[in-house]
Length: 380
Ligand SMILES: *Cc1c(COP(=O)(O)O)cnc(C)c1O
Image (tube, rainbow, N blue to C red; front, side):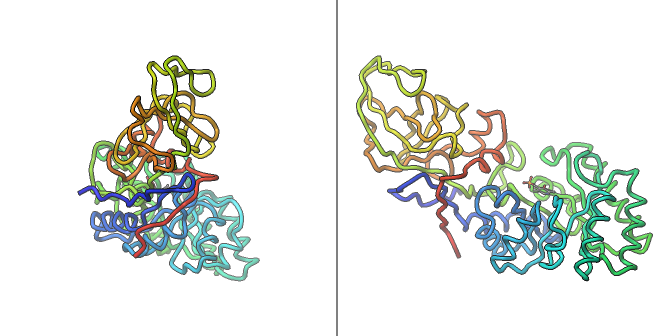
């Protein structure tokens, strides 16, 4: 069943309606698919553009027990909001002392970074809780195979010196969204081998983890101790053409602030790239590419007003775009709400924009920004 977000009949500005009930539901869906693993909700980039703090609370209500972010600053935003559950920061380049003081776990990806974190632990006078990221073939960040032995030995020394405790060993997948890809097996085995080698050398990692949303939903052999869903909890599309019953969390909507008639032959917006082919009525929506309405979508998307679809015409500008309401005006009045994408009847999905733009819904969702007001619904 497709559950719709309640769309306010009137909005006073472009708004991202964030359905926190959908977050809670989506976390439950992931948890059901990974019953033997803990769930770490991934909240990087301000919760994929949805607001990290409210999403964190909704995710915890759905059964997540930990939170994951990239930077220490992102972790401290959660701590400052009073969130006390475990938080892992896995792409920090600074701020380690603040992380240790705030009980934020630190992902380490190289021997040099490990040395920096240990120095910070010495200054802080408290051990760092570490998750070592092993590069099992994504070739992005992570300890490379030739650095593994040095890193492991440094971790053993650091534990002896009371500077650190190795809590986790993790990796990130190159083909997570292709559940049958053979490289998933390669990465699984390399991660398991690194964890086993750590244990053979006297380290006791209790959290081995690899799975993003896609692997959490499709590959039990990659669940290990913990799964790290991001896009799934926002109701995006973790694996193309697979339906897991996830609900879109963000509905991007804006008021129609002006309705006016045009004569056949009138041009619309910069460059007059659209000329009215007949007498018609157009509406103006005050959201543009600075708000996450991508200029390359000019003339290539539709909005819905009260469930009816209307085409966007002419160039999308920085702050506004125009929709063609048709000769009869489509029953649309100034003040009505136009839905750009999300959980409204007949509305486009973020992934539809992604497809048109040659990108993914992750980028579409995180692009909604700046002046766009956020309104939270569905709080439990
Ligand atoms: C972003 C990220 C995730 C979440 O990925 P999704 O595909 O959004 O589920 C998990 N782990 C790491 C290391 C990440 O950077």
